[in-house]
Amino acid sequence: MINEISTAGNLIKIIEDSRNNALKKVNEELIRMYWNVGEYLSKEAENAVFGDAYIDSVAKEIQEAFPGIKGFNRRGLYRMKKFYETYCNDEFVTTLLTQISWSNHLAIMSKAKTAEERHFYITLCIKELYSARELDGQINSGYYERYILSKEKLLPEPIKGLKENPFLDSYVIEFLDLPKNFKESYLRKGLIQNMKEFILEVGKDFTFIDEEYRVQVGGEDFRIDLLFFHRGLQCLVAFELKIGKFKPEYISKMDFYLEALDRQKKKENENPSVGMILCASKDDEVVEYAMSRTLSPMMVAEYKLQLPDKAVLQKKLQELINMPLIEE
Image 1 (cartoon, rainbow, N blue to C red):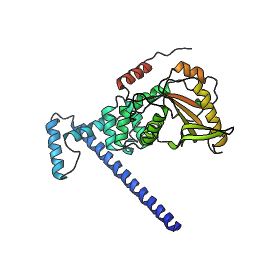
Image 2: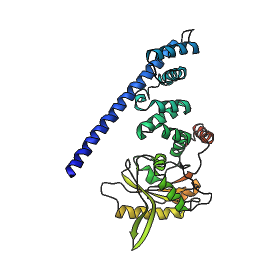
Image 3: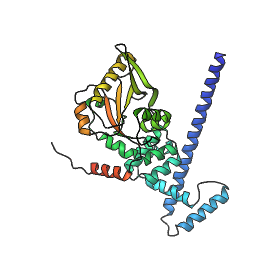
Image 4: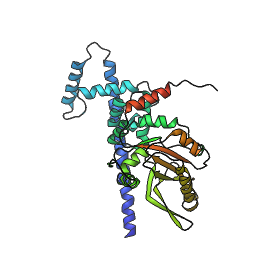
């Protein structure tokens, strides 16, 4: 019976892999077709007769040749033209374009304001395998702006030593339906009940292990709010949730948890555990003072219960970009 289950499992994996590869090939051909159509229309636009009437006639002929075909109306053909013109001189993405879906391309072209932002979301889609809904949510939450602003923050020395920093300075968890005045336990339970959305926000390399994870020291039980494993960092990640403003004493508590995890739970092939203190708000100067002498890799971040104003994030990002360099 066990051998039969094992055989069935292997066959299912073969079928799933083949189906996924076939879907990738289909998507690659679709994107190449849209690119070629867009290139043709872009060159045709140099003619004086090009315009809505010309596009409508082309769309009509395509419908007659391929009855029921979708996406080749006036709007769709203009999108293909825009697709080609957006990326035709962009060497960074020309080799990446076939790796994400047409729906994701449309979202990126319509909402990303700069080439850098488009590059960011294309790369992110490839890494995280976003669906159209997931990508739309990330763009609406200002993920690009929050990511760039986070990277400009002064990182604690232990975090600088990591081969990558997967953490943000601010997380948006608007998917939680919390009352006006809530306890930390409500926040934890809300994240557990919406773990798929939370993983989407923090990154798909995070694998959830448990809530109120128990470590025992000196015969006494201590509970870590949320425990994850990060595949990229190859380490345990402890999350502590706070409903108020950051306080310096949170650092020593996290130090204690990370030490307990490293001594009791960390495997030999894993890297030292990392901590994330998630607060409703924080003062960066207080955080810097509190963490100045800790040797533990940890971060302090804010969470937002409502979608941020993208205009405000973009203004902050623009201020950062235009900030004059200070010569030492």
